[in-house]
Structures are given as structure tokens and as C-alpha cells.
Amino acid sequence: EKDKAVDGQKAIALDFVSGDLIWEADLAASGWNAPVFYQEHVCWGLGEIYLEKNFGQFACYNKYSGKSSLTINLDAPVVASPQLLDSSVFMADMRGNLCRLNIETVTRDWCIATQETAYTYATPLIDRSGDILFTTRDQGLWILDAESGEKKYSWMPKDEEQLKWSRPAAEMALTIEKDELYQADWRGTVLRKFKLVRETTNQEAKQEAKQEEKKKTRKERERERERERER
Image (cartoon, rainbow, N blue to C red; front, side, top):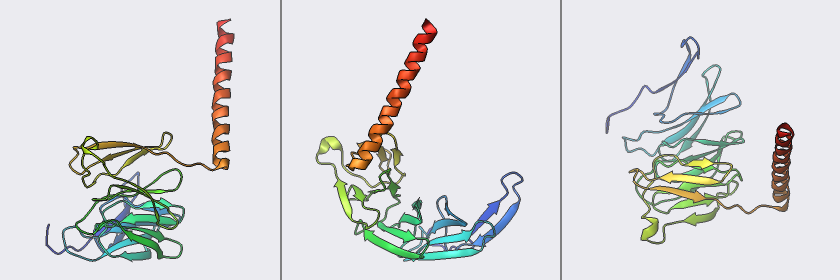
């Protein structure tokens, strides 16, 4: 409830078949989304959304015992889902700060501010090239380099035909094969579709060409078998 003290938050592990309790652990704040798993860790983003607090946390527990394994404190509550890439986690807090956290070193690799005021529930997304996609509250769509956090590209509506940008809430959806990105605003009144165009290296281009050649060869074999059947 808004402005009321919050305590007693817990993470629990249950047996999938019997529903029996395996372990129970205390949390430093409320968790609002599904966890991520890394090796023996199960980890949540934490924070209170109904209280004015300058506290958020990425908290991990041993998935077998429930014992606390690591924590990384953040500067604002976390509601968005954490996104895992190798041993790094990308998280956005309610103030629009987007951070890369390192599970192995238990540190923040970088954090960048994407807005100056108000709050956001937006979740970052990782595309197949390893870039970070993030829908900011009032600065449109950003694409960032995962290693440095540097902004590589941004997009905002240019005219009335593209409709005014409104803060996001729901997570974006990405079709990996076609590099198509879908994004809705918090009211659910505007749905946008983006086509991501990637610059490919010579090696990537050769690899993609090989894949296409394999697909063509497979289709030709299928056609040949079809013709054999007809005979």
C-alpha cells in the first residue's frame, strides 16, 4: 500500500512436482519480476515503488540452498526485468539509470542516465549482435554498446504521422530472425514496429552467406525428392 512501511519480503524455492518448500530467504526489498539464473546463482532486481527511496538492489542466492551469494546496490528501486549476457546483467532502475553489472567481480561496470525526471518501468533488451536496446521515458529508443555503454543510435518521432513518443511500460518484443522490434506505450494506445538494420563484418557476412547457401541447397534437395515422387 502506498506510503506504508514494507517488510517481510521473501524469495522461495518449491519442488516443481510436489510443491514442497525447498528453501526460503529474506529479501532487502520487494521483487517485481522473474529472476535470472547464472551458474549456481538465482538473482532478482529489488526495490519499493510506493515509497520514496534511493535504494535498489541486484540480489543473488544459491539456487540449491537459498543462502545469499552476492548483492550489488543501486541508486533507485528496480522494477524492470534483469537481462543476462554471459556474466553481465543489464538493469534499469525506476529513475531511468541503465547499468551493466558484473556477476563475477560483483561490481557496476557502467551506469548511464537516460532521463532527468520522473520514473520509468522500461526493461532493456539485448539484440543478436549484442547491442543493448532501451526505450527511454522521453528520449525515444536508444541503442547502446554493451561493453562501454556508449550510445550508438537513437530514434524519436519526427512528425505527427509517427505519433508522439510516450513513456514505455511493457517489455519490448524482438523477433531474432527478422530483427524486428515491437514496442508499446504505457497506455497501450501506440504500438511501434522497428526494423533493425545491422552493419556486418566480412566474417559475419560470409557466415550468413553460407547459411543462406545451405538453406537453398536444402530446398533444392527437397524439390528434387518431390520430382522423384511425381515420376
